[in-house]
Length: 258
Image (cartoon, rainbow, N blue to C red; front, side, top):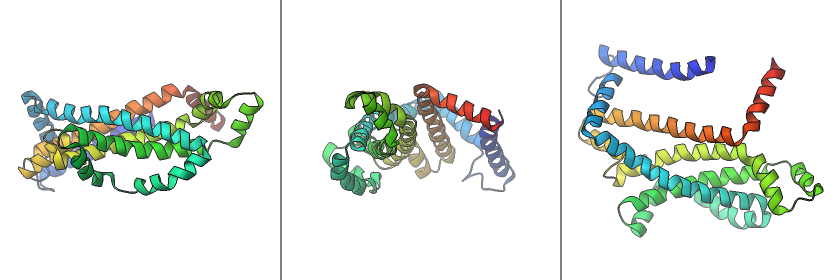
């Protein structure tokens, strides 16, 4: 209960400070309009249908690109985590590509796929792939060796060991990677919409700044933050559903601590 109160209370306090500072002139209300002003602009945009159009454009790109990148990242991460030879062959190359800022790949995708939705979806997929791949591989590699030895002693084959031992053991860390991948997907699509979008929250923020409509700009920023919180919470919820034993372990540890 206390943690929930803090999680809700801190952002509310920050918004209240912003509101008071803007209303009292401590900060320039023209450049930093109050949150209630941004909320009013949000309502106006929703009334005109523009808000829904931009939110859906960004969300649609994420909902297409994220599953593609996550699925490929999970597959490659598991394969490399369970096969030392494949890991030795591919890890140096993928590590080299991993450190490249993914937004710099946008011109490449534009050259290959042209303008429109495909390059932005491809950028999301590639970005998510790298974050999920490296997290998945490390999760699989870090599984204690005794797990595999126990599976062998029980006569489990490679497929059965993967299904009943490796994946369940790595699952909590896999969902951490998936959650990070989701937040990064939001960051990269907003940046891409700054550059080439004609719709989406990134386009709304950048276009509003160019027109000096700061209320729209902050409305877009708040919506990006809200979208990130909601989508990350969805992934976290799926992770808790897929790993029910983790909740039991946490409860047992709390009981021991008490």
